[in-house]
Image (cartoon, rainbow, N blue to C red):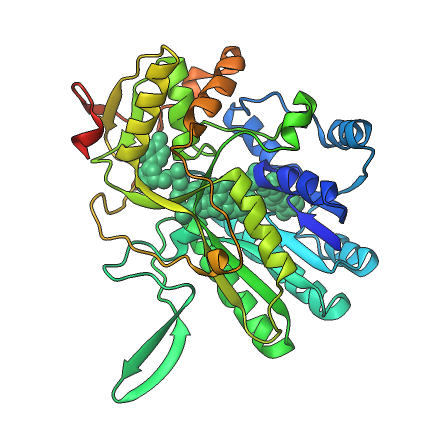
Amino acid sequence: MRVLILGGDGYLGWSTAMYFSNKGHEVATVDNFLRRTMHLERGTDSLTPIQNMHQRVDAWKEVTGKTITSFIGDITDWEFISGIIRDFKPEAIVHYGEVPSAPYSMIDVHHAVHVHDNNVNGTLNVLWAMHQFAPDAHLIKLGTMGEYGTPNIDIEEGYIEIEHNGRKDTLPFPKQPGSFYHLTKVHDSNNISFACRIWGLKATDLNQGVVYGIETDEANLDDRLLTRFDYDECFGTALNRFCVQAVAGIPLTLYGKGAQTRGYLNIRDTLQCVELAMLNPPAGGKMRVFNQFTESFSVHQLAMLVHEASQKVGIDVQIAHYENPRVEAEVHYYNPKHSNLLDLGLKPRYLQESLVESVIQRVVQYKDRIIDEAIVPRIRWQSGDQPEKVHILEYEKAPSPSAD
Ligand code: NAD
Ligand code: USQ
């Protein structure tokens, strides 16, 4: 299949490009290196020493004999992105090409507006370009579980049947996201849904949970193929951050009570899910929604897993409760459905299967690259980026798995 991967230089995009290329698909990527630029802005960097896009595609060719085509440009530039979609004629478009960070979107008005411009307008361009030049292509769009927030009822996969004043309808599930970043995904979902309805486009909105992990089969072929792995306050996700904090000897940064619960999945399962969505396209006319995660954990449970795995490799870890820089429910009900991808054949990899150890071993390999200053957060939902780091409220004494 001809697959266009938007955001193909990113954590998930580069991994997906190699995965599909290895499976014999014709793969092209689009990226403007915004993620690399945002790291320069923040003074942070990937733990893994990633190659630039030219070196990556050359290394891929050398190691596998396969070609990944790279287009460099901005999705918010209509002439650029519409030209790529017109000329490459993708059968599937996997859209990762957005700013993915909740804290980055909460720094100040300029960052909030930039994240909205980039994400919402970029996706609008993609929808219009599909309408004009690739009406039969299937858009596989990365949304987020955070679109739903943490309602006190079960979360359905995109739609809920409602009975109101004696009448029934199936309507989009209510959304109560927790950051300006998460809100961009809600706006995207509304725009995609509208485009499907009026133009008959085919689209799958993947409401993905938090991704963890560092390795894929393709990245393991050669260290030049490693994807990025971030651990700073803006771009690192919880479990990846905890693994780096363990190795750096910094108390694990549990925000508040640590009972915040989210859906998680291994980066290898992201690849499987995107592939399953691509190989089983929906009919046009209605946006399909999958909740894409395999297990739910509280951040405290994640910290305990990292503590246990670190002990096995001789690292002592301290767990600390920090002042919560975010405004979010710290104790809440959480029961989202996630059966659609399992029904299509997803075989989940579970976190307990020594994964944490394998991440920690990789982190140890690149320990010298850790920038300690990047770890403890300064960005607060109430007051933006502040010079002062958030404070530790208390340490946990003698942590044990039964503490949760
Ligand atoms: P990433 O930042 O590593 O990848 C996104 C890529 O898109 C970057 O390389 C960036 O340079 C590029 N990009 C952004 N705006 C662009 C533009 N206007 N034009 C061209 N390229 C642009 O992020 P990621 O972690 O790989 O996430 C990929 C997608 O998945 C994002 O949309 C994110 O919101 C979503 N997602 C990620 C996670 C996660 O835990 N990583 C979880 C749920 C959803
Ligand atoms: N958290 C901590 N300590 C940390 C970092 C985070 O306790 O050091 C807590 C947060 O307060 C939050 C939870 O862990 O309650 C998850 O935070 P996160 O930073 O791992 O994830 P989040 O900000 O939600 O964003 C990440 C990705 C984003 C994606 C989202 C999926 O960066 O692109 O959309 O996960 S979801 O969470 O399902 O919305």
